[in-house]
Image (cartoon, rainbow, N blue to C red):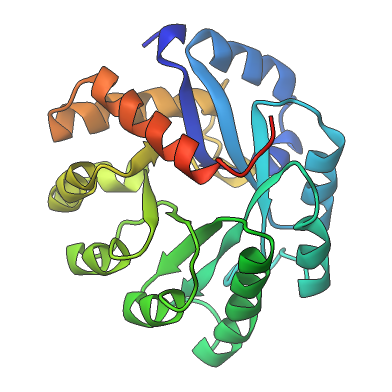
Length: 249
């Protein structure tokens, strides 16, 4: 892998990571390896402020009220305000999580955020863990572009969500032996890019630059799905163009 591939990390948490490691050298090294764009997520007010202050054009951020993250302190008023910011690219990550609070409570936060995304013509970054059928029933009522991040559920759940205007990120979770059928279907679907989902919590002992994990995800996904890196990056670029066509660079 080299800089010619121009890879995008389709879902990460750079602001969160920056509380543990200085980002500038990490970003510079990643760029030398061909990772040049980041779709990053804010799940707290402090993280949203981080993205609003930085001016790197290669970093775009989303913001949302996560269905199952205790440190998330954003509220609907915060999301409404952030939707008007020119550097935000999507609302999220938001969704439904079987490990989270009771489903009615999750829906009461999920649906208003979908409404805000529709109002501002923004895509949505989805966190769907279980509840695929219920998520589909809600989402089909909204004309939204969707990025389903890190999906590693059932093939049937993927087929359901892929009926929507959806793209999917390939993560380390989908490289496991029991997920090969899902990986093949996602790649055949053609609407995909890769992610690290990196946060400070996922840093491994002795790991100098977790942003470089994207290289291994892409390498292994290409090997397992039997596609070339050129085919991967072409699909990635189509995904990024479709998801961010509303942005003024």
